[in-house]
Image 1: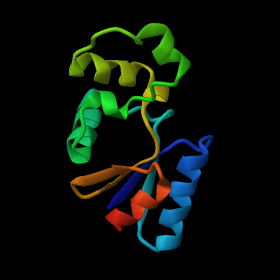
Image 2: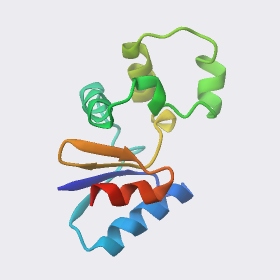
Image 3: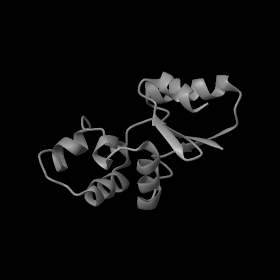
Length: 113
């Protein structure tokens, strides 16, 4: 089943959700700010995305700038930062099987359908 990690307040995330709705595919919506992914969930997503954890971080968020910018963090510390501050997680993330994409731009989602 397709899954989208979604933030309803984010325009790109809403655009990604609209792409899934138009696709006619069954999918599950995870509002990740309310249902925060565990460290294990994030490790799995990062593996499916094929990226280092730091590439999943929204580095323009105030939380990142205030607490983490300029620091050298291990992958585990980056993942912990995202679990403790889910606003830092890039969005939307769409997963289909063992493949995933960050929907920026949202059209990237169509590669998984």
